[in-house]
Length: 330
Image (cartoon, rainbow, N blue to C red; front, side, top):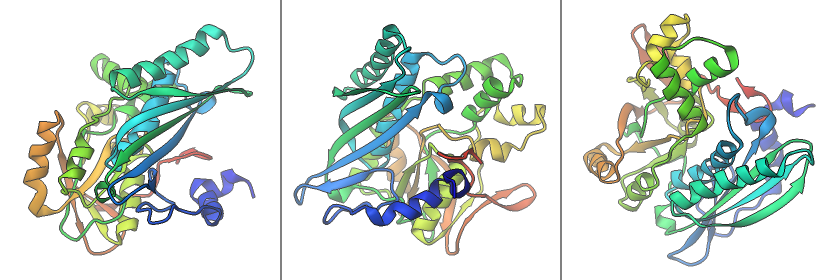
């Protein structure tokens, strides 16, 4: 059977028995990152992510932006677990016809993002391949007690995100399908797709304060992320406030598209999705503001299973659709 037939989750189920978590690790096989306990007070968090030009390089995207995005991909998952990144590495594999100027641009983009984020870029590896394949590695040290899992949400918890969604969906429609968008929205959407930004202080601060019950990076799509967190928590997630970025609703109406799908199935937005016990919500809001960020309340956790969106026409099931490495979007 081809991997395109079973998809990413199917392949993961086939290979999970070949992995062994480090002794006393808090994070399991199906997590954003992995942890290696070093002592009672310190663990190493590590994450690896890959950017493949054939599937990930958007029209008009520069090689420097490709390198930068690879760094974002690697670092984002550590932040979602509560880690403050302390080092990164890059593996650059490319065909021999790639110009040396473009290769340097890739590394420059990766390095500049790390430098501006005060995360040392300490080296990596070079190799030859049939396509440009960039693999970023990010590491952090963290107190094990501050590592936040995908599961752990409880009945009554607030579901929150740090930004609104849908801009990358708009960017894909504009860049890949040629749809028209109002000029200001188009610029914002493409900027979000080419140069996603991260808040390095938000989730670590909330994790250290003990105000999160679960958290996950949303790069595979908000809907897929919510479904994964709900399954890991053994609970139902109810979204009653669709976190659509400004302009997304108008774009959806203009093209007779489903706004919920644009918001839920966009992906590549690198926005943390978290759950907060109701009694700690005010503290979480204040801490978020202190880091220069915000929290957007989008729903609540209750007993049951799955994810539902309470829209104008009642409850709608949010499918576990999002990005799949072997099927792309769907």
